[in-house]
Image 1: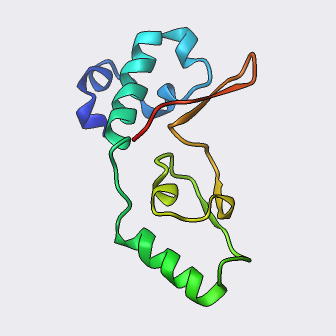
Image 2 (image 1 turned 120 degrees about the horizontal axis):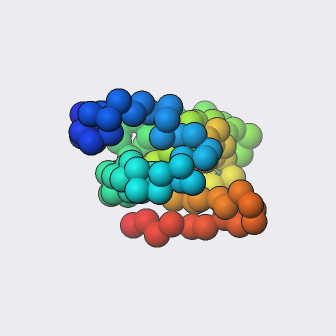
Length: 112
């Protein structure tokens, strides 16, 4: 991905710099360049065959209850593959729900 964001690469900015909590206050233009590019890439992604195969296996072996999927992806692919919403645990949140820390408001960013 860094190869697709040459401006940041040329400036010596690392991924760790872009995910800092204060990045928006530090540089709103770099923040939106990075996160907007990532959002544009991920908003149209579709689940791959593995997402569907895992769901089929879980439903066959475990039934509709008593299981969950923990993941750290930020792309909503499990939701898009029709996993039960209460069976999905996201470790890092996702790109389509943003939280304003000062006011603790959660904003749903439009997706497909």
